[in-house]
Length: 513
Image 1 (cartoon, rainbow, N blue to C red):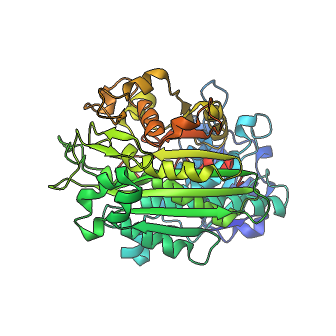
Image 2: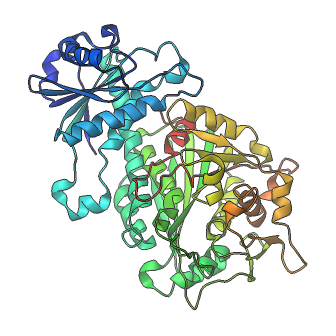
Image 3: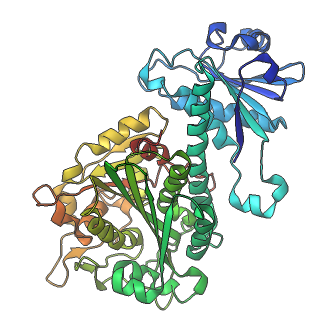
């Protein structure tokens, strides 16, 4: 983890080799007084260049980088302008060979528009994102395990050392969780095979406040997680690919007033199974574990920030969707842990199969928890990307949770973690309704989700039915709130680095910062 320090005076600047200035304008009143001379050189350059591109100059031994946010007053502008500017500025410093950049963020808009109240935190998180080093690189090339030795932060938004300390605690705690998410989600399918994910998390959470338990062995899966076992069946013939259900738990030491319960899709590699992915579309399928990676990252964040009044539970469904003689196939009928007979329609719809039984067990646990809310988090459908684009997580609620998706959207909007809202409708339940008396529910059709109307909504209806959550709707004696989150677009696509979305929103929703 990169060391972050608050810079409060000109004397502290001397320890840094670059200054990255992020802001809307170069008004002197928006920045600390002791940076005046550094900004003067940039202002002179800006008089000759009115574009919004990064501008670079040299002041003594310092590389000074002006990375503007661009406009902030249009209908479609949001705080991501600060994140993008911080990433660009720090990246430019790295290209210049700098190892200790000082991030300086303006105070121009944060007090005038609530959309930008978190501009400083968002900027610092952008800087930390820019210096992330993948776990494979850290392990194979120790001399390249860090891109910088430290990052400084300065802003007139920081009125006291206490405020600076809280900012750094929040940012580094959140980034610690995002590192875990990126490590698991972005690593290749052998480095983060199910057993390797278990090893990684045991090392990460050993001796911490996070409890961990692992279910392994195909016999156990067949008994308690039969839909998951179907996906695991072919992979089970290869020892290193055998599945895991990883259970994580955090409970604050004070009275719990809310319980957040997550199930994450952790498909370490998705060949499509018997419905094999063909035509060159299999590359990048090691990213199909980003939902479970997000769940793991939440607990890393919890370990560092220790929020009060909450209990958080996570189940990571770690499995490889392999293809071979023992693959599960379309037309099979498998009874879920909830006693629901599922007709398999397409083996490439393995994520909903892997999560439905853990969701059932989570729902059973929720009946005994305080104020529970259940979530599934998954890179589930290509349709999510077609419908909303690559930058946005999609949330959709069951009846008891109605309105929560809009809440998540509002939370994410101010911390540069954007969302779209979808609705689970009667058409989605009709889509997965049984076609005959053999089955209770149909898992999927036989077309790609991207070619299926409502292709990212109907899988939520399937999971509600297959897990028995339909028995806990608005008309039930024990209604349970449930929100499905599809991050196929927002999690980041190969060959880029995973974004770790939507960890920031979920952390804020837990009141972790």
